[in-house]
Length: 161
Image 1 (cartoon, rainbow, N blue to C red):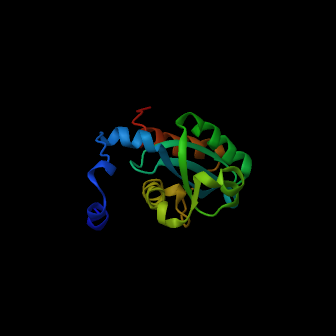
Image 2: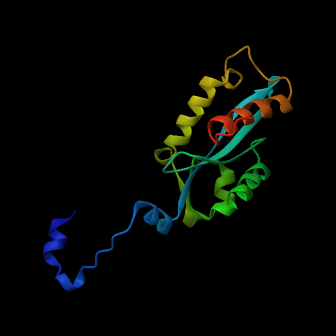
């Protein structure tokens, strides 16, 4: 509370609004962190990227897609995020974000993507085929996407498959 400002105001100039935290979040709009995580299938020359978005406040996974590190894969993720009506996106400086997100809704920098980077560490710890130096790796993109997708569905969405 800024006491200096309060002392300079007259009571007629002050308006106080009381609402629940959920309502305030709804007024502000949903904010999201977006990032991509590298892995490979068969050999390191065949990269496979997990693109995903989480709620900036709760850390809940909103959507994810697999593919290359290309604009068309990001556009698939953006299409999945459209029903959420996200008002602010926090990303790293990858070009696809800059090309396809409205600059007024886009904030670049690692300061606001700490939750999603933490999720990367947790996923890499639990699924050994995502660790950069490992002897465990997927031989097909189908198996890679199934294993990672089942993990996300189970531990993030609570869907026991």
